[in-house]
Picture (tube, rainbow, N blue to C red):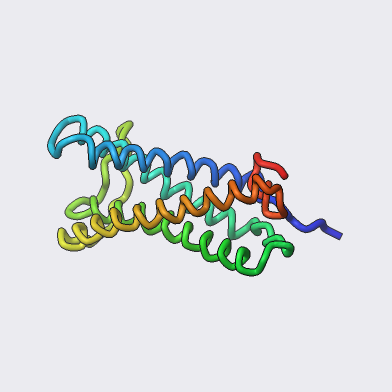
Amino acid sequence: MQKPLHRYSTLAAFWHWLAAALVIGQFTTGWLFHKVYEKGTPERLEWFSWHKTIGAALIVVVLLRLLTRFFVAAPKQPPRLPGWQRVAAGVSHFLLYVFLVAIPLGGLMAVSDGTSWVELKFGLAFPAVPGVTEAVADWAGDAHETYVWAFAALLGVHLLAAAYHQSRRDSAAGRMPPFSR
């Protein structure tokens, strides 16, 4: 008889932490190019280029993470957790995935008008979303910025919940390597 899975797989943990690092990079580069440097300056263009490059990497990592999730089941919710916490965890994880897909795709749409490839760092390029008009690109850029704030709030709740369970060493603690109960 196979033992029930109580922790995420090593591969799922790898994608989780790589996505987390890329998200930190996105928050940092997005803030720098959007709030620190004036439009049209070389520094702003440089940080924007990094933001697009990290965003493209995040799209690939999230797709690989979802593919992993399709083939390797997530551990079941601990039955000892109160029902409301299991529901909250399920809803918040679903929304985290939605944001991890919607925000980078919104950013990609925002830079896709009139081009077939989006130029990135290191001479790389990422396929643009075809058929995006200037109006759609503007809307996507606004949505991208708005969703970032909602994602940041949800991410804060996720981090607080993880810290709460880890500090209590309850049945939800240690599900994501390298942490343990």
